[in-house]
Length: 88
Image (tube, rainbow, N blue to C red; front, side, top):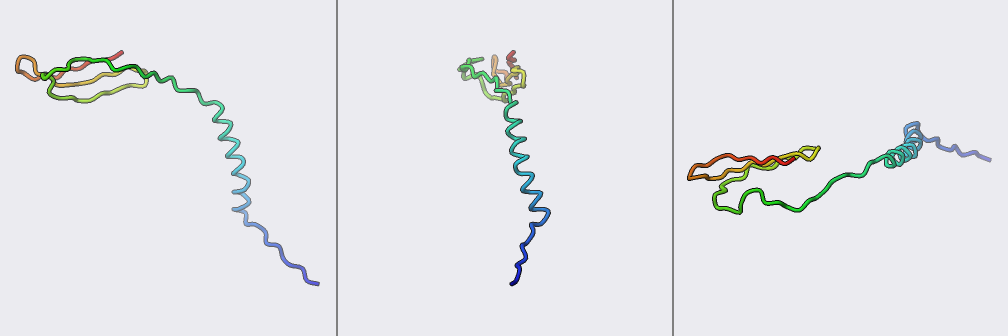
């Protein structure tokens, strides 16, 4: 009667099998502590225009606390001015 050798798993595979359930439990635990986002999407508001005097748009910047502003170019009496509007 012969006895067959049973292969033993390598330490790396054993470690992997132990870490997967632990990582899953950690992810579930962290997901329970996530706060919902407090984002508010408001309707668009016209700042200046519509007008042919607006000749360029520089961009919009918004901070995490909800403040921000925009920069644009407008022709006033034939002279182009850089204008900005701050939103609080």
